[in-house]
Image 1 (cartoon, rainbow, N blue to C red):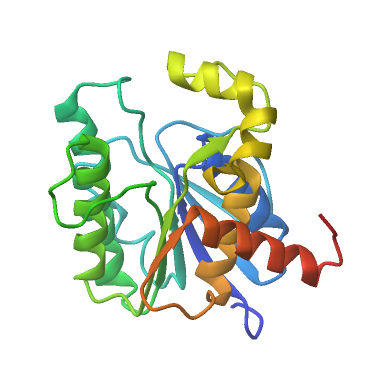
Image 2: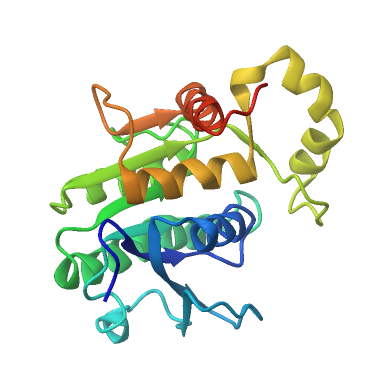
Length: 236
């Protein structure tokens, strides 16, 4: 039984850059009663609020029906990088896996709020020349049509990893190198991975600022981070 106002959260992608921070933030969040982490391999994390569920084939999430029943919120951070896999696999990971997970979640938790890690330039019309943008837009459109009461689409630009890691592509290696200058010159084109994770979890469990639509661009995400920091009394 959860305390009054606390939410049960399911998280996908906890082994990834943003998902890892989302897990930490959710476990520390007093508004979260428990976290069900759906993972392909063990995280090696033990916490009284966390339940780990191993699931390797996101093409079929039927086996997750029990784990996804009775959830109040979901944060979906599963994804891959353009250039790291074939175009066909990029679409499967970005669209098919998202839609299949959401299908099973919707059946067992029709009232859940859904925070989705989309991307800058996501195009729901399908006309973009960039595969990543088309596929993220396709996933967004499918989520919005599923009937969840609240869907939050986060469209970050460059996500700064914060902690050292092996960058997946040359572009990401370059961006990490020039990040200090890039952040100063183009502040609305960057977001820290930990800050992005915070607002995704916060929106899923507590709601998000009213907007004309469900999509939050990089500028909006930064504003949400600033609002959270202001509440906590953190400047800058």
